[in-house]
Image (cartoon, rainbow, N blue to C red; front, side, top):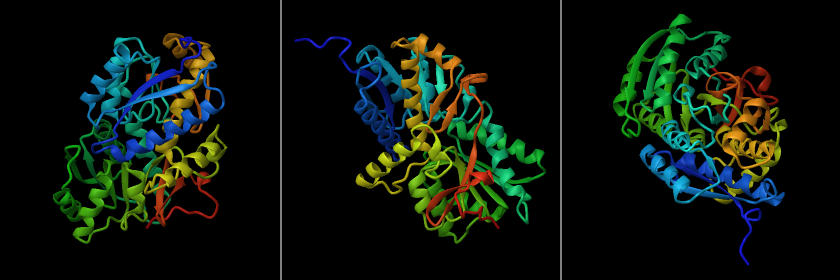
Length: 378
């Protein structure tokens, strides 16, 4: 007996970097997506239909993402799309979605100005101008220290969003009176950062601002350790969370966050259940950091947004789902998400976290610190 359309699963297609330089973070997003699909299917699915995740490996290559999203739409005939990880791949997927008038929910676009498509919706609440707000959050956190920083070094990957945020960060630093003592860029995927580490040591800034993506943070920490140098204060933009926190020279380093597995974040919609399920699975598969943090929560929130749009519209119609998202608030693991303003970005809700005893702890704003925690900074 043939399967009736209303009984067939809703097929959601997407790619993630399961291999290549972004594979460590891609694995986090894959696991978070699987947790969502399993949990929503256990409750009966969406619109009375189970979900099926059609996941392909883009190998950390935007060109592959473009080709694979074309395949998902035209050959695999998926019902809905879910965005990939990483700015370049998201932009590639977005071009395909726009060509076919498909809704695209995405979890990790670091430069919203690259996303003028009106049917893309970001899960991560970075706001419309992260090139300003990201560094403002960092400098706000350090401003109250006994010895506020006076000099800063900007060393960044040429990964598109990292490059944009680094340039904006230099403007923010200058406006606040900090002297930029070093400004370096390197090709994304560069593995030998020895020469860069030597330049950082020579400049010896009060803050090292690193536009590292994925494992680049670990590679830079390794390179600085080899020359016996540790920055006074160091910040990394989009590091692989587990390997970075576990690094023997990571104590005290900071990065951005929008979610960690402690209060008050656990009060967000579905967050506590998500954290419990994700952590159990992460331990079982041997993740180096088997804890839900913002990368995992952003992927989970993207699926919450996609599901809410389908339920809200009452049908799998991309235009109707997009219209519903523009008019409504979605309760997610990252908190309430709205999509007003430029690039459907909504309001920024960016925080700062720090490695303390090989764990990530939210340290700024101060009221988001877990009980008994402090911002440890010289």
